[in-house]
Image (cartoon, rainbow, N blue to C red; front, side):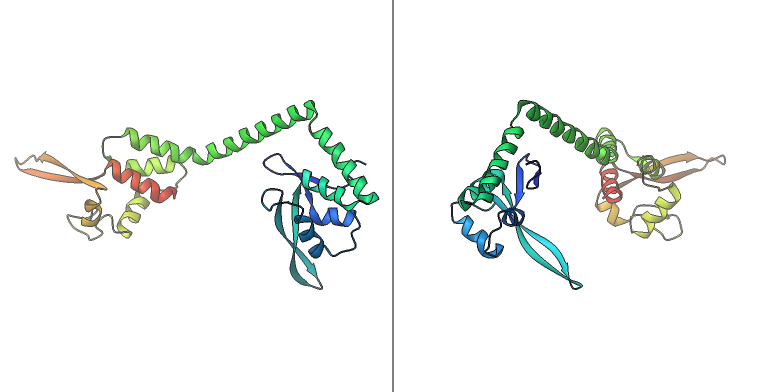
Length: 235
């Protein structure tokens, strides 16, 4: 009686049976679309005892959909008993055997190990996906100082964003964060990015050899700006 009717398992470790496959095995004369609603009148509830499914099929080159239902094992067992036929008796005995094997202590331990393994694998995948964002978040939260645009480009590149300093400057100018007009203000923050608090201007006084003094201006990305651009590039 092994594999008499196909049984699957969902993410909640519940055993499920296809309503249409059970209907076919029981050799019910009534069409499935008429038979199943009558079975639900015995007190079975959707999303508790069963779930509706849309199954894609193809006939004569055309795709159409038909409804199936994923029944929990207890519901499949009761429906089999309701039929009061030899096939119904056979199905019910089969489900009882499956249930007994399912609740065997060795099987319970084995399933618990499998579930734990799946959880560990899923966590590994999630951790790998989150690693670049976590690195950036940690770097920004730990940083209380502004950094140069070139340093931001290095951080981006280290974490999978292929963006060198020149390309980052181009991007910042093209997207309105830095002034693109040639002159003394070239590569300085726009009023827009300053209003957002993304940049600050660092002024350095330089003593010239002729005794004069000049002032050098450098755009630096604030902590808020680092977080802003990190979110931009990492989505």
